[in-house]
Each structure stands twice: as C-alpha cells, then as structure tokens.
Image (cartoon, rainbow, N blue to C red; front, top):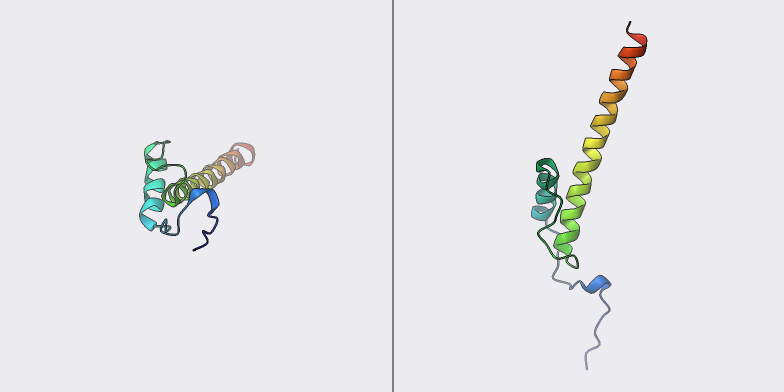
Length: 78
C-alpha cells in the first residue's frame, strides 16, 4: 500500500505557483476588484492573493511618500 502524504490545506502537488495568477492579482488590485476567481484551497488562489498584496504594498508606499512630500512643503515651504 502507498502511504498518502499529508498536504497542507488540501493542496495537491500539482497546484504549482504560476506567474499568471500573480499578475492577475496585481491587475485586480489596480482595477479595484476584491474577489478572487479561484477557490480558496488552491495554490492559484494563494498566488493571486500574493499578487494582490504586492500591488497593495507598492501603492501604500507610493501614497506615504507623496504624503510626506506634501506635508514637508506645507510646513517648511512657506
């Protein structure tokens, strides 16, 4: 008998991380979509979520830099 390996969160060995899902997550954030087109217990969902989070962090960094630049001009640029 073959012994089955315990897979984390019901993922199979064929659920490979794909760049396509990552890019779809980035595009979804930029267009304002929140819901993933993939099932939660798949590697495709995780890659989509990773792309979405990457785009969020990149946007957050840009917003913070712009706020700091604007605040500096208001306070010191009189």
